[in-house]
Length: 341
Image 1 (tube, rainbow, N blue to C red):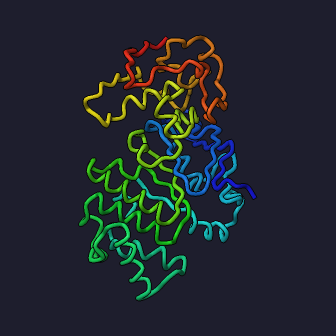
Image 2: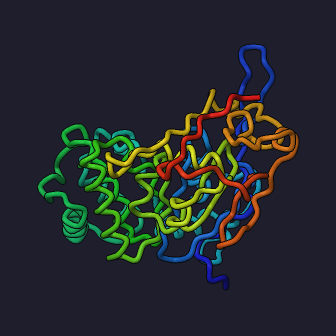
Image 3: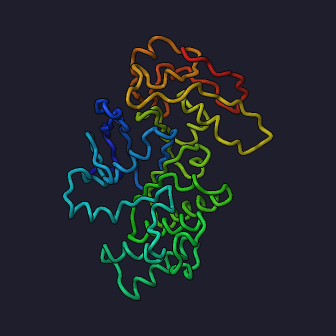
């Protein structure tokens, strides 16, 4: 059996859409050939702009969405090859915390019942035993057990997100997908929830896939970081290495947009020109070349798709000019963005 805990190989997820009233059906490749691996107990940060495919990837891993092609193995077991009974058993080991804490909770169900429901469905506890476990879960995530009779609209956003975390923990999972769990929260509440997630990981020995669009948020928890753009993986590395010296120009731009921890330190913002290309018709060659600010950008970027390849230090990058990365924001860079060709 592999020593890897979660293995993703050549994963593709396509959606078919209508192109208007009389338009032909279009295909959107939301996840395009992504391969990743995680070891038990680590946190992998998955970062990218909205529409990059990171949330879709997280849901396909859990088989909340069926894949188009590719493989996901969880603790050596083929997730896509499981029948309904086996998949239901696996659900206990793999859980998700959604971004929208309001939308993920039934407004007609008390938050206590929302946390109790998985216990009953998986036959882990009933009656007073379930009540005791729900109260213990509330305390573990920093909520007063008196809130068990409250409805979602009676709680703040941070409290609702803690309920979502308690619900995910109720079945004692080993792997949790955190789908932008703090992006809708105030900054002060974000810090509290991030500290809670770190404590839970240490206490329970959890493995996290932490999905976010903000590299600064991911920095608090991630052991490694993977960056997606238009469905493709463009860079992955150990967190400290990536933050110190990103190799892909898209990663550099994301890092420049992250808030600086020290306001006294000047940071040169890398502004990308234009919007991301339509996922219905991605550009040929490197999918990032239409917005890429790299001064060496050339015809090869427009004509040839860069292959994700391993470089020194165990890092992976998909860029023709990764050997000459851009200056790291916050380290004296004065570079301005380069207009699109």
